[in-house]
Image 1: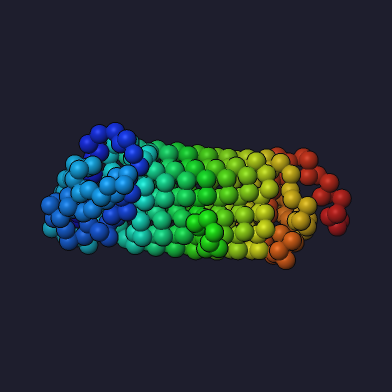
Image 2: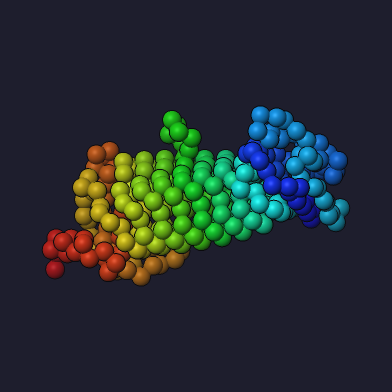
Amino acid sequence: MKEVTLTLKQELPVPVDAREISPNNFREKSVKDIEGLKIWTGNRQVALAEVFKVAVNSDGSDDEVRVRVVGNASKIRKIGYRTSSGCIVVEGNAGMYVGEEMSGGSIVVAGDAGSWLGMKMKGGQIEVKGNAGDYVGSGYRGTAIGMKGGAILIHGNAGQEVGCWMKDGTIRIKGNTGLMPGMHMQGGTVCIEGNCEGRAGAQMRGGKVIIFGKASKVLPSFAFEEIKDKIKIGEEKIQGPFYVFSGDMNEKGTGKLSVNAPNNPQLNWCEKYVET
């Protein structure tokens, strides 16, 4: 295995586009080669060695590459861009666009991550031990392409529009989310173990949004279907009961919105429509 450690030399005054930080780009490269890779700091293109101290530890095999980013990387953008194999560990905070267009491998962020985490992700795994910003698993503004595969796990909270334009894969958030998780969603699963500010599944056509905590109101364009004792996420069965809605009817959608019943007594009007 080859381990590449990148240690920030100083606090960054401006954002850095460091899409070169990926196991793909470090394979079969020496320390000197890695130091010479070009990244953007503000509007200047510089050698990676100007921003990071580079160290490489290898047993002579590049079959597996592990990358460690040490320091406050909250202004480092695009870590893990188009990663297809290997592992990245950020030992602190990370900036925007972590794991953009990732198709394999894994990324672990020990702290918080910025917005657009896992943007247009196709495969692999991302885990954030802290919080994440807006648009987790989404696409660029103006596009209709979000996450297509893989798994994202966030131990803290996430912002607005989680899974916007999502087509496949799983996003699981242990904390709370902002408005409109699952917006324009077409497939896949968004699981929120905390509370949601509201408007879940707006304009969704397919896929599943599951809310364990408080969901505020359910959009009127969703139709109540049934009460389920359990909800399945992959091979895991989550104890309910859950109110299950389908929609978004404005989009002729067939998506499923499942909301924990005991935590949402404002939705108990659904129970009178259940056949006994």
